[in-house]
Length: 102
Image (cartoon, rainbow, N blue to C red; front, top):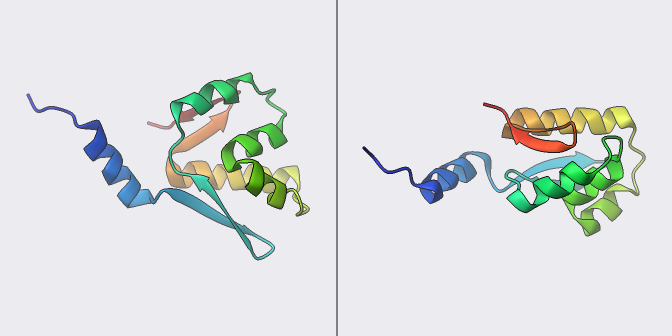
């Protein structure tokens, strides 16, 4: 039986998706990771489901979140952004946890 090589499979995913998923708001570029470290999942689970700022801070990091916070974004804007992120990366963020679609 062949051995499953996690590093090789990860390299293939990152080659296909890139390391960052980028989006633009008012001409300013931002990036989300295409893969989340396991450690972040616990932090996501601790968030209240309505804590959009907490979610975005974890995903973007403090510096990018501060820049994003300068733009007027509605809840619908953020929802559409997260839906596109999930669709493009296979990542779903919901019900206080991150998961990947099968």
